Length: 331
Ligand SMILES: C=CC1=C(C)c2cc3[nH]c(cc4nc(cc5[nH]c(cc1n2)c(C)c5CCC(=O)O)C(CCC(=O)O)=C4C)c(C)c3C=C
Ligand SMILES: [Fe+2]
Ligand SMILES: [Fe+2]
Image (tube, rainbow, N blue to C red; front, side, top):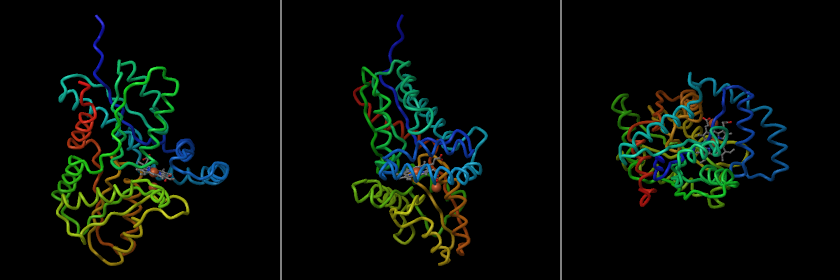
C-alpha cells in the first residue's frame, strides 16, 4: 500500500554558522556570507579586493577565538538551538494536527543547505511548504537572502512546490507575549534591573534609507515589549549592535549606549536581544561578554543578559501557530 503524503512540510531557515571554531572554518563561512549582495551591496570588483585582500586575511583569526569562547560540546550554539527548534516544532505540530508534518532545517550559508533540506522534504513526499525564516523582523539582508538562496536551490526543479512564506512576525501577539514571559521569568529568578536595553542586530543606515523595513519593525517590537511589561519611557531603550565596516549603521549603537549608561551610573541594566530566535555568537559573546565588559569598564555596576527564546515552550508554540496560520486550507 502506498504511504500517504503529508499534507505539507515546513522549511525552517536560519543564517548558518561555521562548522568549527577554527580560522579555516570561519574563513569559509565568512567568504560565502559576506559575498552575498544582500548582506554587503558594495560594487563587486572593489568588494572582492577588500574581502579577499583584507577581511578574509584578518577577521577569521579574531572571530574564531570569539566562537571558541561560546562553542558547545555539540557544536555552534546557533546550530544547537536550531536543531532543538526543529525537533520540538515537529512534536508540537504532531500534537496539534494529529499527523506527522516533516520539518526540515536549512541554513542560508553553509550546511544543511537549501538543496539538502529540499531533498529531505521531497523524500518525505512533501508538495506544499511553509517557509519559516527564523527572523522576526524582515530585512533584505536576512529574509531577503533566504528568498534568493531558496530560489537558487529550486532553479533546476521541474515542478515547484507550493510555498507560503512567513515574511515577518515582529508584532505577532504570541511573539510579544513569549518575549514578555521570558523577561518576567528572568526577573522572578534574578531580580529586576533599573533599565531594559533591547539590542537588535544592526544594518547600515543606507539600507533603511533604501527601503529596508527592518529598523522600523525592530522599534515596533521594542515598543510592544515595553508595553507588554508596563515599562515607562525612561525604563527601556531600543538599540542596534554588531556594526561592520566604516559606514554609519542604524542608531543608537548598543556599545555606545552601554558606555554612556555605565558612566551615568544608572545601576543595573538588563539586556535582551529580540532579533535573534536563538542564542548565537552575537548574543553569547558580543552581548554577554564584550558589551558587559564595556558597561562595567565605563563604571556600570551590574549587567544581566536575558537569553533568547531558543527552544522555550512558548517560542515553539508561536512557531507552530505561525505554521498553522500559513497552512490554512492545506489540511
Ligand atoms: C556585513 C554586514 C552584515 C549585515 C547587514 C548583517 C545583518 C544581519 N545579521 C543577522 C544575524 C546574525 N549575524 C551573525 C553574525 C554576523 N553578521 C555579520 C555581518 C552582517 N550581518 C558578520 C560578519 C557575522 C559573523 C561574525 C563576525 O564576523 O563578526 C549571526 C551569528 C552567527 C553565528 O554563527 O552565531 C547572526 C544570527 C541579522 C538578524 C541581520 C539583519 C537584520
Ligand atoms: Fe549579521
Ligand atoms: Fe558581532
